[in-house]
Image 1 (cartoon, rainbow, N blue to C red):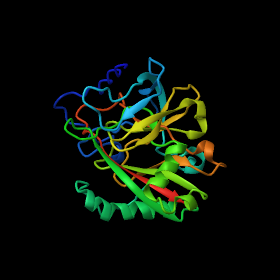
Image 2: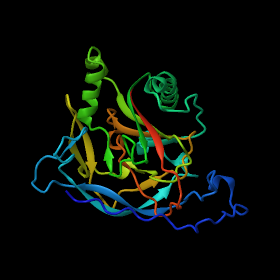
Image 3: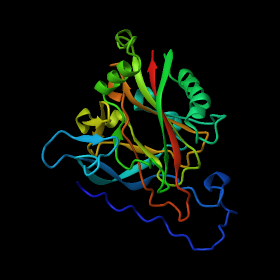
Image 4: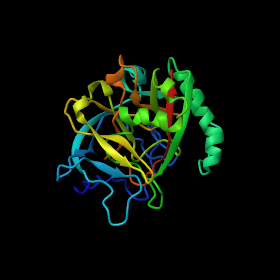
Length: 303
């Protein structure tokens, strides 16, 4: 397996210097006075490299002792990412497979108790999706993941370009979570949409990169067997292609929501029904920036 390329060193700041905020707009610095990186940036992203033995790629959700977590490698490429900030209105789920929502309030602040997250935050996400997605009639939130950059965190930001679902795994999700209704539901439109937000914004480290799905070729997407202890699912790895167009949303706040569509059964927008994404290291990240914390809630959307 190819070893990941070393992460770029954050931009240097003079130790002990007091930031000069007199010429900085409030929204361009965080609470510590550190500058929030804005605008286009070139960064290294990890793309798919096939298994050297030619076998089918797979990944273990829970790594086994003495067994590599995945059998495929990484191909690092320098990619230019444009900033969505200020041009959010140009993108939506049907055309690009991602969308942005601002100024979303929440009554959940701690995000340390799963039961409270499900009782307080889940209804907020369901309401957002029903209001935001045209035609949506029913939403089932089937899981969530919290990621923290500190070394002791169970899950860290994923620095690898991927898509959470494939067409076959999306249908399997419907059958897994709603077995009694699956035959009927699979005859109508169904989507899988992730709702991503920071917990300690504005995001300064490991922002999330997204590719415009309209510029991603089907042949760039590689099904990967996703092995759980009790079943197998499927995700998609992504080959690099120079025709891909990449973006990130600078300085995401806790009130911002990034919607990521992983699958859409509507064939009229099927080509634009999946969004490759990855955390990345912004080489402009100032020294001393706090590690990113985030939550991603995954939803089946019917209608």
